[in-house]
Length: 352
Image (cartoon, rainbow, N blue to C red):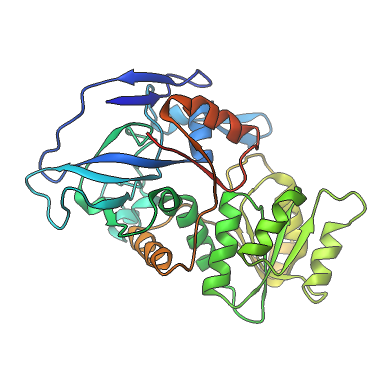
């Protein structure tokens, strides 16, 4: 089988040929139909995360070992199963839950393997879906897709899953104002989900007005262009939110300027959910946190049960991923380069 592998930070992905594995026990061999191109793949390729103030966290310090096959948003067809597999048959269309944990830490025992203390996530800590085939450690990490398109389904394992988790944490109820920062693949999915599962009025914030038509189509009630030099975005957002500010903000970018804006537009008792991994650092006026009694929390992917709930929403046609570009496996370098250059609106996928 062919795989596109990261050999080291910022090194071109190498197309390698290797023997197709045979599953044993609970293992399942998946023929990859589609794999999402995610910003986490980009961080893996670049070697880490910007922590701000000149600090850089290497992925190798988190346990990543090169070379590694990236790709954690994996949809495909069951090719072969081990002898202990139940409920899954050859030919089934499935989505892989990639956030595999140790099964022993408090997070795993609580059903949140995505928050494991010693993660074994596919496409990060073990080989993932930038490949013709992928070996999944257990059938328990697969969910049936039925007639859901594999390209659209990929994001439900990560970006859609993260957006769903963030919307849940935002706890937005009518007649609240929910501000969504970022209209990329994550933000657009967040808008759809917020429209589907809350009654909040949605304000989409981005610095690229070319994304606003799609944001409105997905359900945004208002849009604010932070790139408009003639506009004070903070005043504009507060005005839209009835003059008292936003009840909740989900920041799908999570960069110093966006978080600064988010904190400025939150009303008393407001809720800020930080999602993106853009990086950097921020100085906060600490006294405002208790005085306004605001909540700041993070959202990172989601649980297996969250993913199955998302698949049900996709089967009902409530949500859909915006797939704007498709690449062959041989063009994996172009896919990551285009993502880094912000040439992708919505999501991109690789079709091995």
